[in-house]
Image 1 (cartoon, rainbow, N blue to C red):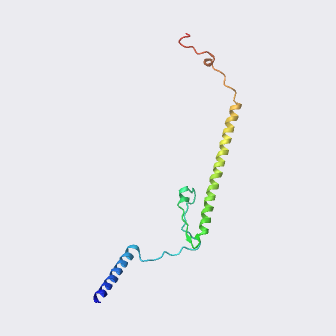
Image 2 (cartoon, rainbow, N blue to C red):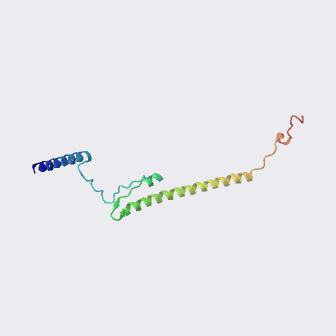
Image 3 (cartoon, rainbow, N blue to C red):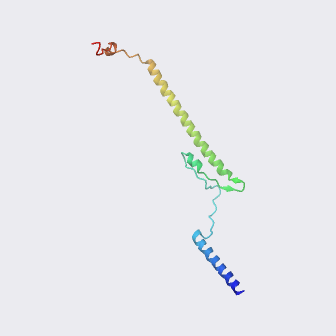
Length: 129
């Protein structure tokens, strides 16, 4: 009976030492303070969102899935960035079309180049000389 009691006391002491050691190594079990209302741990850059930024987005989990306000916020940001990029592409295409149109008009308006004296004379080869 005494042996069983000694084993029990030793096991409790070992468990207490392991618990204290784990508490020191991994922290004291403190919780992080709650985020202020409206705040979110979800992060995106202020501008120039890249595919990697979208791939790396993580949402806060709530009872029934992801936090809807965070998902909506990310979708609005990506939508705005995509709209900006599409308008920039459209503007660049418009400028390119205008530039090509100006070059085409200049070619039409230019008089044809007159042949030079060298171009008018036939080439003389070694066997024709």
